[in-house]
Amino acid sequence: MTRQPAAFCPDCGTATTSRHVDGRDRRFCPACEQVVWHNPIPTAGVAVVGDEGVLLGQRAVAPGVGEWGVPGGHMEADETPEEAAARELEEETGVSVDPDALTLLETFTTGPFAGKYIVSIGFAVRAEETTGEPEPLNEVLDVGWFTPESVAASDAVLHEDHAQRLRFAWERFG
Image (cartoon, rainbow, N blue to C red; front, side, top):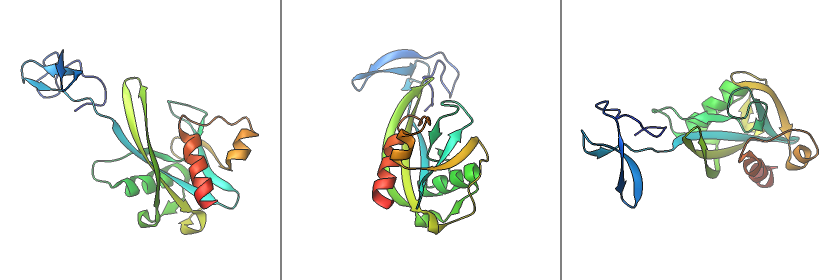
């Protein structure tokens, strides 16, 4: 399995070819005689909802530098989605939450970004269930509290698919 379309087999290094398997053209290793799967990357994020809106971070990394979104990122191999969302929230904003306090909000798929596809798992939590004051940390330029209405009235640009997550969190918990 690879996160990008594979030009070479990750097991033996042989150049891959294209083969029609299970109704799709897929990358195939002729030496190993197996498909080199190109699967989406799992990510997780958490929308912290307070009286003034949903906590968003302004991205400092590609894709979407300068765009605003719900704190989140790639899951680690040994994490649950809840643990990944809580870790990413703390890494990006300094806000801590117990992963058990998170409520599943929604999921979406997106991509490709340079050949990479994403499956994003979104959670929400009320601000009073968190600790710490929000501040821009790792991979974040700024933090702020937004409602769907305040985003629309500002010059803030939301990262792809985060408008839906913001709206769902605000409607459900705001």
